[in-house]
Structures are given as C-alpha cells and as structure tokens.
Length: 265
Ligand code: FPP
Image 1 (cartoon, helix red, strand yellow):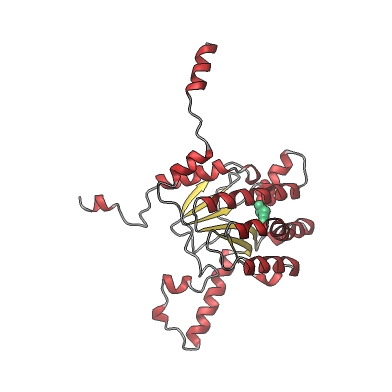
Image 2 (cartoon, rainbow, N blue to C red; image 1 turned 180 degrees about the vertical axis):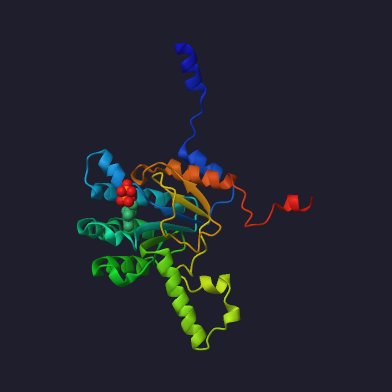
C-alpha cells in the first residue's frame, strides 16, 4: 500500500508557478481584473489577532498580486481598498485603513516605478485624509509616464455614488446645451464615470466566500466574468490568481449573443 502511495506521489507532476504563467500567457488574458479583497477581519479573528493585523497582511498580498498581474501583462488591476460604506467601521479601523496606502506606497513606490507600474485611483477625494491623498497623488505623478500595469485603487469608492455623480454631470451638460439627450448612450455615459480612462473589468474576483458585489463598479461589471473563492484575502496566493485567470480562459463570453459557429446552424 505504501509503495502504491509513493508511486502515485512521484508520478504526480507538480507544475510550478512559472510553468502555469507560461501556459496562461498562451491564451487571451483578461485586460482588466477587479478584486473585492474580502476576509481580512476573519483571517485575523482565526488567529486571535486584532482586525487591523488582517488588513496589514492584506497589504502584503496586494504587493504580491500586483507584481504577478504585471508579469501576466494584465492592463489594469482595480483593488477595492475602501468603500463609501467602510466609514461605518470603528474610527481606529478606518484610520488604520486610511494609513495603508501611505504605508504601501512608502515601502513599494520605488519597486512600482522600477516595474513600470502606473498608479491610479478612483473614488471620492472629499473625505480622504490629507496624508493619504498626498501619498496617492505623489505615486500617481511619479508613475504617470509608466506603461505597464495600471494599479487602480478604489478608495472611498461606491458604485451608486459614482453613477449619481455621472447623472448630475450629464444633466448639467444637457441643461447648458453641451450635450444632446439623443447622444446619451453606453459609451457617452461611461465617459462621465470615474473609470472613463479604463476599459470595463473582464474578470471580477471576490475572496472570502461572500457572494455579492457590495456596490463595486456597478455599471462597469455588466459583462464581467465573476469568480468567487472561499479563500480569505490574506491567504490569497499567486496560484489563486492564476486559477482565476485559467477559469476565465475556459469561459465563453457571448455578451448576450450566441457563438459564431452556432449562428451558422
Ligand atoms: C474587507 O475585509 C477589506 C477591506 C475593507 C479593506 C481591504 C484593504 C486591504 C486588503 C489592504 C489595502 C492595501 C492598500 C495598499 C490600499 P473585511 O475587513 O470586511 O473582512 P471580514 O469580512 O473578514 O471582516
């Protein structure tokens, strides 16, 4: 019996991350991946640690996943770092979360510059503390000429607020005579959103087993492929991102239509 198990173990080919990367790069890669990074609190609780320890570990994962996304030639990685609803959390947790972009960029901005990553942000600047705003602004300026992965932080971001702001701006333009109602279509509307400079996500990932969207990119994910995992964000590894991309590559995206072969039948 032992021999059988040993034979099975030795005959099982372990595929390295590098080999898997090589394989996924042979097929179409999602241009834009958006991630709802959930489960930091539960990760900490399981270890009898304060919730902020989970957020800190989550930040380490952000670095790892950013580097892999860049290596996979993904155009945009949008990370839901703080929602418009997260202000409801205890002040010390909010303060800690608002300190993370500064800590992350303080540590990794040189690496992001070196790796040609371009930092971007979506969200409303109004409530974001000055020190956080300055750190993000500095990173945006210093990486503005970079042409690799766009690392887009969603900070104080909410999908409904974004849509309402767009509606207000469109209404103003119609009222001023700068826009004709008949010209309002998908493309025109998208141009009023905070993501006007990005393509829509091809793949949306949510960690931690929750099966909801939580007010994230409501307009933009209309045709995104969804991938949910029970893995808590601080446990999310490079292998998980590759697994999600592999799953994406097996999907058939029809955008409400049918396959071209089927249309010939
Ligand atoms: C949700 O988990 C997570 C957040 C609200 C914050 C996510 C932030 C990070 C992963 C770090 C961001 C890093 C940078 C560089 C900005 P939760 O706290 O709701 O977890 P729970 O559902 O288990 O309680």
